[in-house]
Image (cartoon, rainbow, N blue to C red; front, side, top):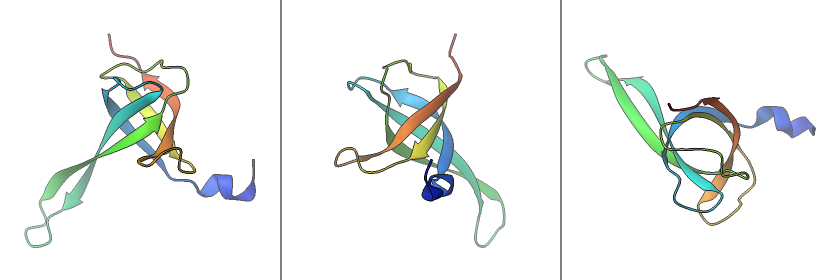
Length: 86
């Protein structure tokens, strides 16, 4: 691995779509404090990630890593399926 490989961002999320070939849409959720009231608010974002073997299904918990742009909207890849859906 190169020296920059350790600086790549890693996110954990849930697969919400796997209709595309070798691509999954992963939804990540973070808790951020409200600027005025300090109550924690759930914030979510969707990422398109490269799934080389088409092994992810909807509902799977996955670990994704930032990578070079693979298409117009895809610059993440699936590293590991943490938990399979039953």
